[in-house]
Every structure is written in C-alpha cells, then in structure tokens.
Amino acid sequence: MYFRDRTEAGHLLALNLQAYKNQPDLLILGLPRGGVPVAYEVARDLNAPLDVFIVRKLGVPGQEELAMGAIATAGVRILHDGIIRELGIPPHVVDTVVAQEQRELERRERLYRGERGSLAIEGKTVIIVDDGLATGSTMKAAIAALRQQRPSKLIVAVPTAPADTCKELQEAADEVVCPFTPDPFYAVGGSYSDFRQTTDEEVRELIRRAA
Image 1: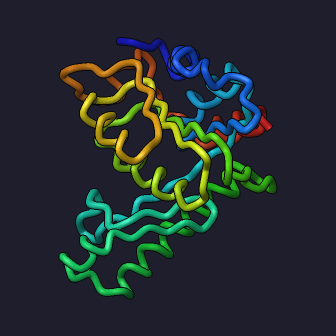
Image 2 (image 1 turned 90 degrees about the horizontal axis):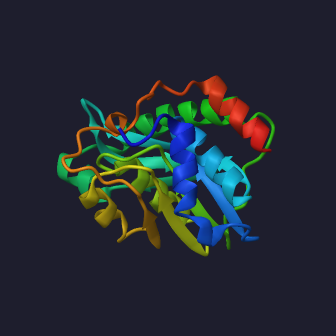
C-alpha cells in the first residue's frame, strides 16, 4: 500500500508538482469521480483553481469496453473512425450512443457544477488528475478532448499507474507525473488502504468548496 486514502495521495502528488506552485495561469482538473478528491488536495497545495472535467467513453454496442470514441465537457466529441469502419458501425448507431452518453454527461455537469460554468482552458497550464490509471483509455480521451481547447501545456498527474501506461501517455501529454509505478500492477485500488467509491455528493461538495 502506498496511500492511506485519496487525500494523502493528493498531498504526495502535489509534492511532485511543486514547480507549478503559485503559477498564475495554472488550472487543476479532476476526472470524476475518484480523481476529484486527489485533485482537490493538489489544487489546494499548489494554490490553483479546481474544476471537474467529465469524459464519457463511447462504447461499441455489445462490446462496451471497446471505445469507438469519447465525448467530454464543453461539447468535445472524438470518434475513432478506424474502429467504426472496421466494425461496420452505422452512423445512426454511433449517434444513439453519443446521445445516450451526452445525457449522462449533462446530468453529471448539472449535478457537480450547478449553475457555475466551466473554467476557461485555452492558454492555461492544465494539470489533469485521476486517482490512478490502469490502461489509461479514459485519460487518453481526456487529453484528446483537452487538446481541442488549446491549453498552453497539458500535464497528466496520477499517484499510481503501470510504468508502460505512463510511457504511452507521454506521447499524448506534455508531461506525465506518476510517483508510484508498482510492478506487477494489478489494479489502482491495490495502492490504497481506503479505496471506497467517491460519491456524487462528495464530488459536488469538493467543487463547491474549491470555488
């Protein structure tokens, strides 16, 4: 075990990000739900604003674990045309999945943010935080979505992940910060003593507190 809980993981992660402390154009984004408590501590320790960045994977019908794309906060939509072509997925099926995930994304936006709009990303140094990575597919979707909003620099920061996942992400992000890369890596939860699921209410409260 490396971390007692997500709060401790956030403090330890922030120690690895001290070069960015008090930077005026810094923005911390947490991936819900488990990434938000980690991101909250990072934002506090680095003296930076916090926002939530919601990504929804577009699963292939019948093979939901296989992503044919993703949608994200601020109307970003990414489709993996190669997978869609290879599997012969018709446009109306893609549209149905997009609509379904869009509803869930909007529900979470309303739930987590209330009437507050999302913070501007263009020109900012953005640190995107999760509580850990396994394959990194959600983070890859988040990076692709964020690139469309033109941050000046994009840093992925997670407390724990497999070394090969971190290496892959270095091709997409400007920097990857991951203090603990267990070998063998079994699951994100294996690095935590307390890995209870973060609730929607906890996410709401942390975003409210940060604002």
